[in-house]
Amino acid sequence: MTVMDDWVTAVCAELDLDPAAVPVPAVLDLARDVAHQVLRPGAPVTAYLFGLAVGRGAEPADAAARLSGLATAWPVELGAEPADPATP
Image (cartoon, rainbow, N blue to C red; front, side, top):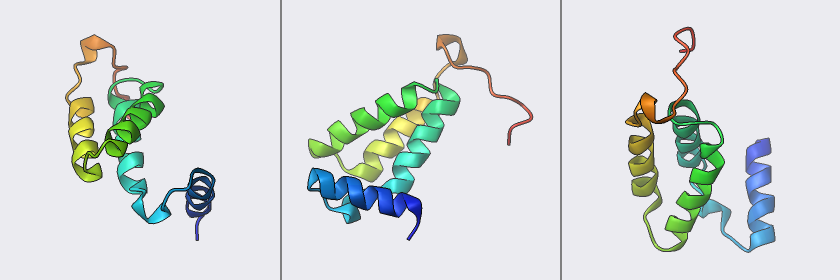
């Protein structure tokens, strides 16, 4: 197990959730897309909103893909910090 696995398992136990239902890679990818394309503080807020949507019945993979698409299409002039060309 990784530290992430341990953390997710502990949080799920605390919140009475099933750790197997947590799409960790999708959440991390979504947070990365928002942090890099929109703004860093938007990542945890978006993760929270994603969780609300999933809690209300949205399919996790679909919701994450839709939000990642929104983030990657976000216009720089609306507040995104320009990407560092040296960053892969």
